Length: 84
Image (cartoon, rainbow, N blue to C red; front, side, top):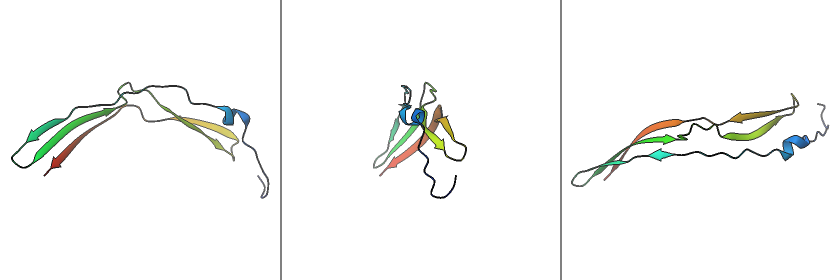
């Protein structure tokens, strides 16, 4: 491309829509109650179905291409929360 050159986005990029999808997040909390404190421990799993959620396409002007990508699949984590 040259300075001052205007390039329009291709029609297939502008008209593209994300596909429908579904995902499920699950979390289980366990409470430990003490006299003046509460401790919460939990496992958490995001996207239990491991569905690769599509992300909006990106257009690369240098390569003149449309790039598609997906989000992370299943994402497990654990957590601890203390209430005083």
